[in-house]
Amino acid sequence: MIRITEEAWRVMVDHAQSHYPNECCGAMLGAVRSETPQPGGETIAVKEISRAIPLVNTYRGEQADRYEINPMDLLKTDKEARTVGLELIGIYHSHPDCDAYFSKTDLENSCPWYSFVVLSIQQGAFHHANCFLPNAEQTHAEPETLLIPTTKRA
Amino acid sequence: MAKVSIPTPLRQFTEQKDTVEYAGATVGEVLNGLTGQFSGLRQHLFNDEGKLRNFVNIYLNDEDIRYLEKTDTAVSDSDTITIIPSIAGGLN
Image 1 (tube, rainbow over the protein chains, first blue to last red):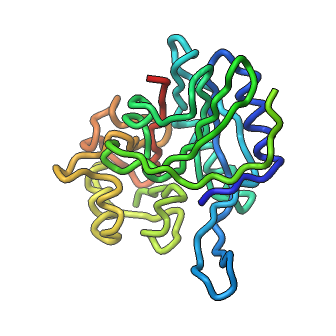
Image 2 (tube, chains in turn blue, red):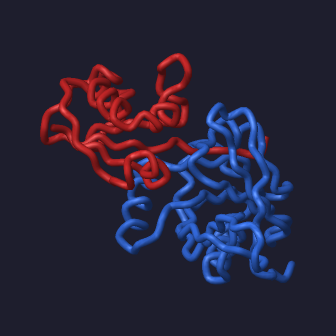
């Protein structure tokens, strides 16, 4: 399960909407906590995202349907996370005028070390989002429960 | 010995160490030392054929080893090897 704080979520949505009609991408920093939702119940790991870092989409072609992250930007972000006591937990990107699915291209260029949040931006405004956990073979991505603050649709 | 910088998600396999040091003449030798000590790491870096997984980038200082001599790239004691995933995507 992944839960995004209001502050981080605002950064992600603003980033995605401001880059419309292109795809944006960024990193999600936070911490993994153990929580027991119901007294005496099962303890689960919750990834709490407290900070979102917009990254540059370095794809050299048409960015309306592609994104790419410079590995050195990711390295810098990973180091930055460590210095403030957070972990690099996930990656987000937007799908302009498309649903928030995990596409074949997303899957074939993914990494199983992170959670991947996809934001659907419809006509320039946030519409919905989903989260996925890809496998190491890049052949399948499991949906991951995503908890986001209530967002008004434009 | 060359330093190897471990990304956050893989530190669970290196006793939470973010940097480890290994002796080796090449990047491949250093990585073998790393995965020899921390066996749980191997499956995250290499596929069943022993090749680096598609999404794994290895940098020697600031250079991607794909553009050097790959795992045969020579290493000196002052070098830092960094493991960074490759991430991209698209609508289709």
